[in-house]
Length: 253
Image (cartoon, rainbow, N blue to C red; front, side, top):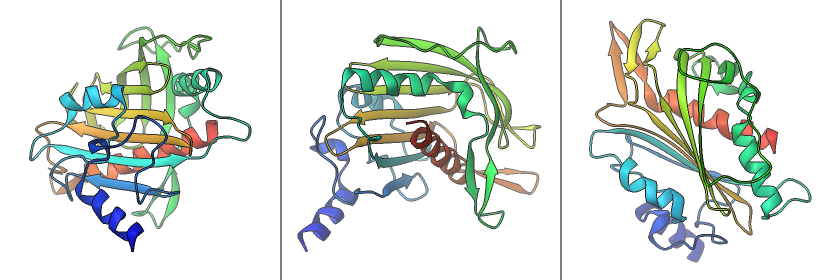
């Protein structure tokens, strides 16, 4: 009964309302995934209270009518690993290993629950518009702030460029990805103009595991876009993307 009450409380209260920066796992998470979106909730409520994410959510939290989707997961530590400076560098380099996203997949319910490739190309470039691939820029020490430009080709929105902005304080890693080019459906119709989309990946090692928060935000954007009789559902599209990112991280760790 107590566990049930805690789970119900979580549904009404943002994780950030009283969670400690590390070590506390929200009730109802366990080994599962918590999910909300603008189609079911007015505002995001799963983000935790760690300083980097909390600071950015003040700017990213949408107003009524804006699109968002968010996931909260608890990832197990790899064998022999735990919260340490060495492991934080490992997490940071995993997020910077952009080329390893090539070939990541998701389960398509529209295609009979089949595994479908999401990203066919991904690599770091010097500037938006360049197609010259650079090596993944791995580090041996954690920089507090860093930025990359990434080229990506995926099955949902075609060829695009994104900015990747990294922040870390040694205990938490926050990655923000913003589209620098318009995201197109069917290679023709612009669904999200440049800089309309922000995706977030936040990693917070805790005693029980790695708290993974992922989200996508788009201001002044409905969850469904109608294009000449076709409907693009952003909740489905970016839900698949968040699932694929989580799977990629688990496999890389």
